[in-house]
Length: 421
Image (cartoon, rainbow, N blue to C red; front, side, top):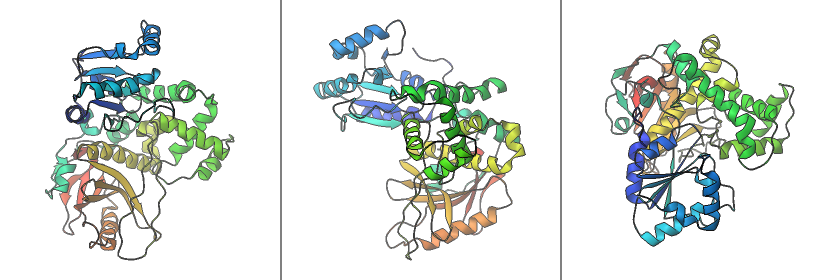
């Protein structure tokens, strides 16, 4: 069941390596991001739990003898396995019994509820996060500069292939596989359809708790207005009140938890480095949707609307950069955080690798504030206590257009439409 027009994903090589190292791989991420098709490229048999002709039969088998559903050529894909949570424990047991790697691939668009599975699967079932497509995967980045090469000290060279109008379009379209390559109207509709599905159905089905669609939509609109910022629950409640809706802090927390379980939101944690001074670091995470197109849909705007509101566009562009950096950093074993201290000094994105290396980005969509951003990055470098941690592998200003270069002060300028993993 291979897809002839499948677009290669960075996740392909990650899955290939993971299958060599673990008995089972659990691919988790938002619905419609391409998990199933990516898994199918490497699976040799498949169980589709959502097949309407077979769901009742599969559920009965899962209750009576779940091991029957595991029979098939390996790697065997168990798509949307969480419909029958017992499959998790069945896979864990089968991996133990077989003593071989690359036996199963599990995919799911929701995190299982506590108590749905008996065992964590640690050591037997590895987890792999999947997101929507980056600009490089969708063909909207030239890929002339790789994140890995920045960590190696290579000189960035390239020119962005997108103008500001197309940058607004790819922000609103997002990285949904069904949207990439589609006609403009069809592409833009995917994020709107996704938002409607989350609001009307998924956010209540995820844990069986009925939630008011209008209030969920109001919360998502508030998150969109505060995207790429450290909005607290209290801030969100106050912001929602401006829309003539009223949500208590506990309700907002419940809704946020449901959206997190659906992989709709993915906050950006704070980076906590060792500093030379006793400067207090801010530990609040920044708010992000898994794809900035969700924010565009929640705000009921469009590419043309973004071009009329560059303040909002700037925050959404930052969220687009964070999305792509997360995808690229995953390939080289890294996480994407942000830095902010009590003096107001900040870095929009810090890529911290698991081996201790790190690099920092300031995001500026245009060219006018590159000097200011570079100065901020150099101040951050001066505050790091290099006796206790590595100096930065690179400092870079990420822009929406222009050339990729290294400045005389050592700070790189890297347009997002030039970047790849």
